[in-house]
Length: 327
Ligand SMILES: [Zn+2]
Image (cartoon, rainbow, N blue to C red; front, side, top):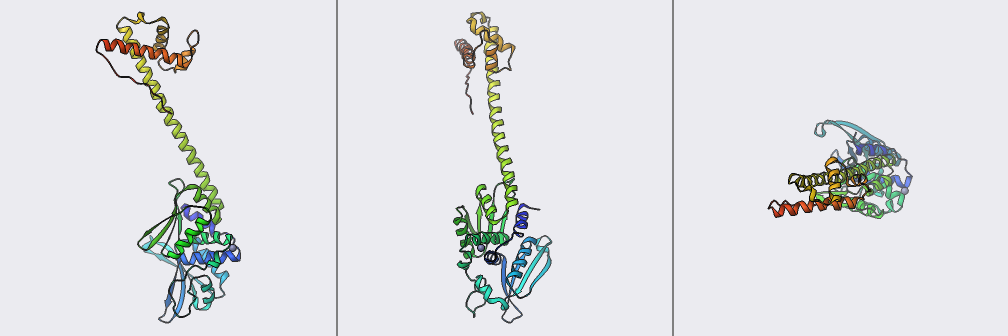
């Protein structure tokens, strides 16, 4: 199952206070519901269709608590949705018009049945209810990527009013969201790992918040280990390159029979370098008598390279060398 599914599953089992139930239901139904007229009469039917069993379960439960009239649930196989099951939850809206009006699902005027009503601001006055609204919105139209990949949480709705309400609530909690509009759909999305983590907590998905954080910690650790390894590999390559250059310079003196002309201190380090090509400058210094520091060894080997370069220049055999360390 996807991470999104796990989060919805956990959210669908959250306990909620009666004030919060209305806020959550309003968000859920407005994000995922449709209002239909059936039978050619003005019989209004409220339907919520979803392919997510946890969302269906939550809508059913909340509607049962909120309404006296019976709630029907039907399950259809849907070939267009890769044979997933489609859950259709319906209630006869005529019997509970006043509550649907209160939720902002039906407009408050009697005569017109179907124009969209706005979100009732009284439902989301309290902080707990704002959190419940986020939960309902996520169950209705939200998704979240597996944290192993890039961080991404999104809500997609056709309802502009709901999109704006959602942005305001995310902003109320000090989090940052972006919006993009495409073909009458509004997508509100978050990319920041900290912000996504906070929303999971606000909605009440505490177990999945912990899973999210576990993956984040591992990912951060792996990234920093990779950085260190890359850096050390780069430095090791430079050390090896430098050793190859130093040995080439020393061999130049030997091949041209001018090794004896080098000062004794330089001859001493040169012999050690030839004998131990893999040792670091520090290790070479420790083999000297008396012991020499890393910078002293570096200075002497550099001197040998410079002198070899001078001889080569004199004979027209110059090659360019550079030594630079990163990280
Ligand atoms: Zn509340």
